Length: 323
Image (tube, rainbow, N blue to C red; front, top):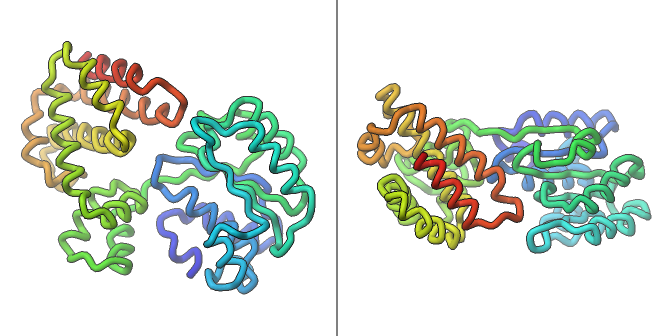
């Protein structure tokens, strides 16, 4: 077990290994990129590597330190997640107490801040003070879906590491080693995962993922075919969708497929190749409009983690898409 088990994020692995090997690990890292790209998983892996008793530039996964991190009980690891819609200043202030003494068991103390873009301004300002002059043994790993959602003052004090798409081939071989799917299913999931190992694993672990995709397809076709007067009803329905981000990912991929297929006619370039018939049927949407629709969905996805009124935001999105 170790960094070799994490696929597709070579830059992040290289930076951590170089820092551990040279003894000059950065005190702040900001991992940014779309959901399900492994940012939090990698942050935990970096925490293991920093404190592993068996490996110098990696982690074994089996020593006492690695096991405690796996179980979430390591005394030198502090994970901060949003409480409700925000990360509050009270949560950040607790880091001061955590960091006031050297590590109890490991080589360094680690603070992971998930969805750092949800910090309130007072929380971000409080974190900034810690990032400016951290103790020698304190390290921060922040995650965010987009860089421009983080205050510039925080960005300037972190090493920035983008988390992008993993190739279909890498996902395929990863699943082949870690699942019992048949070859056709492996290829299908690797195709549909759209560069996300997390999404691929989520798909194969859910017995209902095919049903969910059918539901998303019906909803998308309803959005396309609905009249302007249906927008408010559609927005209210979507606002109650528990997995709204997943649906928006599907919607964006479907729009992208429509654009690609009607521009090239090459079905091998499609993500949702199993819905080729439906994609082919949407040939009456002009490429410029498809591009605008994709941009609007991307913007909506970027803002979705923020504490916005979902229904009003969806109404605005659908109005623009009907455009």
